[in-house]
Image 1: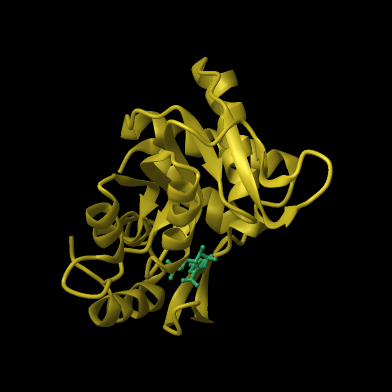
Image 2: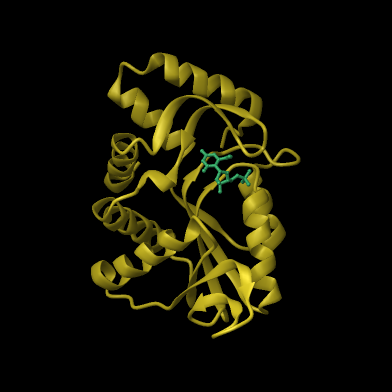
Length: 215
Ligand code: OMP
């Protein structure tokens, strides 16, 4: 684990974004932890979050032309990542987001920002079973753009339809890489390093046995 990844986990726990307990997921699974990116809910938190996304984008080295933030949660994520790429990494890249309802007046359509064309890097929060990201892929293919990859905050490392993880299935089906700031393995390693979190670690390991992949 790199220093920025450890710092990110600490930051997420500090902000209450990463929590331990009992949570029902979109997929219906009952999880002993939850990552709520909406709780990065102040100017400072968002600025710091952007730096972590930008570091993960740089680290992943995925060639792309435009950042895309899927509505709603992806919008501030892509925005703050774009700001950090410009200010911390001297890379001024265009970004675009969608609205969920098409607008018939004014500029019209349901895309705001740069044109959704070329190689698109999607910025999102979490992938569990891969349902949300598959919906996003339809927006990109409808626009005639090329998916370059996805960067998320947390890879929960959960199984998809078969033996592969949901993320590996997305990578296979769309022919693009999915990178993350941290993975569940990083979270487990962090908790083990920190100590005093054995019940939470046990619950996560049990959950991983049922829904997770080992890799
Ligand atoms: P999938 O569509 O199953 O991949 O779930 C991903 C979505 O679930 C995310 O975009 C979130 O809206 C939500 N989610 C979280 O935000 N944090 C989590 O830790 C887990 C989930 C989830 O419900 O699986």
